[in-house]
Amino acid sequence: MAEECISYNYAEYIIRKWEVGTVNLNAVSSLFLDDRNEACKLLEATIGLQHAMNHHVKLSTTSRKLVGAHELMQIAMHRLRFEFNAILSATRWNLDSESSGSQNREATATESERAVVDLKRVAECMIACGYAKECVSTYRSVRKSIVDETMYYLGIERLRSSELRKMEWKNLEMRINTWLRAVKIAVQSLFYREKVLCGAVFSSSEKVAEACFAAISRDAAADLFSFAESLCKCKKVLSPEKIFRLLDLYEAISDLWPDIELLFSEKLSAEVRSQAAVAQLKLGETVSAMLCQFEEAILKDTSPPPVGGGVHPITRYVMNFLVVLGDYDAALSNILEDWPPANVRSPPTKNRFSSPSSGGETDASTPEISLHLSWLIVFLLCKLDGKTAAYDDVALSYLYLANNLNYVVSKVRSSNLGLLVGEDWIRKLELNVKAYLTKYEKIGWSDVISAVPENPAAVTPPPKVAESLELYYARFHEACRKQRSWVIPDPKIREDVKMSLRKRILSGYRVLCSRINNMPEVIVRYTPQDLDNYLSHLFKA
Image (cartoon, rainbow, N blue to C red):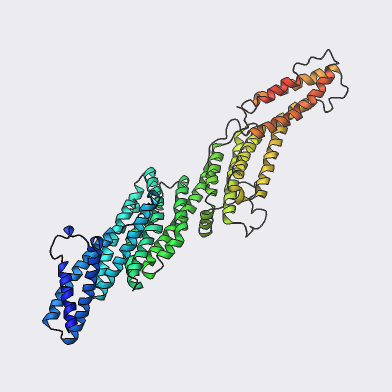
């Protein structure tokens, strides 16, 4: 009995010593932050008081001492709740660890470890004394406000889709960039550390820890993932060119999905996990719809082909689009498996640009992304083929097709598209380029070639030779005149074509000129080098 009195009296002394009463709490400093020895004494005194109360309850439930002990316990809990609040409020995470030095990080880590130990001891004391509800309530309130404050600092706020729809694209893109920076920090740092803290402070009860984490993170996580879902409803500003930003969002969630599943694996957090999954699903659905819009834009293009047969603007636009799209192969593969485009159709003409899957039944082993990207290229090539009707000169139409197909091949070879569509298909396209150039040379220069006798070394009367020369000169100049504005943008193709023309046009002429040296009555107006100079100036317009 004497020991109980000593324990009770000691507890009363310590507890009343640190009573905060009705004092302005802002003026009170935390024992755990200023004097840890006194803080430990307060915890010991509170536990001692609880033991004393348990002893008195066994003797009498109405004793005056028990009533006094209850009042004393209220004072102790008021102080401990203040201490709990103070430690929780002071425990903040360094979310930008790269910008702080190693010494600062080590110091912060030590302080955090000490804070976790203190929080755990206070929580265990309050729960043991029957104040679990007050302990959990304080924890939720303080940590939720810190999480919400941190999310605001990261630039995340809840916006309705109606608010997003009113924004200009540049403002939306700024928010997308902010979101992409914030989501990784929120998931891998903020939410992760909060879950670890909950588990450490309430290690004696997984259910309490789970409930606390769900309560403090639910709203912030909802604000985070609702942005992606709301953005998908902004149909007016989501033209095909914006598809890459949505793919960035999709990739971000995909990359973080293992962390999301781990963090929000419990039943009380399942709503957050579900919302993240829905956001990713909506992004995939929207990306698929935007791919269909892109296809429609190709088919509806009515712009005329370039005057000189160069690379059409739509070719540059489509291929630059597809090159970037090919860099999102992992995300796009998943999206096309979940959301195969609804309006994929056969090309608008019988196709000489067969895709990797044509010529029979589709190979089941060919990835969906490879099929879709190659078909988009086929749509483009068929569209370009249809534009040749605008040319009056057939040779120019073949030069135009060769230039554009060569541009397509060069873009495919120099990007991830090459791996996706396959080497065999690229080689087929390259053969088509050569075939177009051969037809261009044959049609564009056949008259010039035919002006020289098939066997220029054969014995021919001088008048006949002179007639052939004049015809040759006339046709050569006419061909050069017609083609002076024609272009071949690719330097290698341009030189290859010139080399081929020199061989086909000038070789016979050289033989003929060598025979004319013995015909003084026949006038040679141009040396082979003169004509070569004419050819050298072609295709540069």
